[in-house]
Length: 228
Image (cartoon, rainbow, N blue to C red; front, side, top):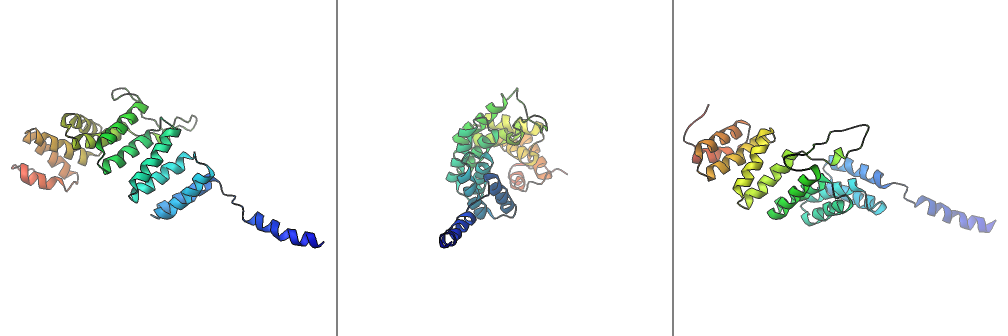
């Protein structure tokens, strides 16, 4: 009887110290913290999620985003790279990694990631934007619209003075009605750089009309005409 009494507390301690939460549980809790802007705390939970399952792509993507928000760009890139290692056709991981590279002025790296993202969808001229399908899992949640990819690539191209190619990207975005205020702005800047002031000013006026305050300074410097 004494042996039983001595062993029983040890069994209770061992049982109560077990972690019964799954990787998905920790990821879900982290998402709640992210919604509250508590990114450091969310990362702590995502670390636990990935201890449980190092191949939890959702946790890796969430942690990568949280790290980029907290300006841990190197850590963010590592997480996105891990996602790509696990799923080489993950469009979202490529474009998000490219976004981070744009932020740290690795524009060539950003262009490479954007082009890899495009390849996951097909080509620039023949591609498929996925839509949610309740019957077949086509990877909708990891898809990214072509216009978003080309917008990010346009910024990177502009920053390495590849203006003609950058223009093509922003022109495509205008056609697709994507981020119009900014797409008109960037296209307008490129027009101005080529001495095409009429076209540039027209785009800048459109950008300002759509709420982009940054267009005002360029208009004052380059556009003598007024527009109601």
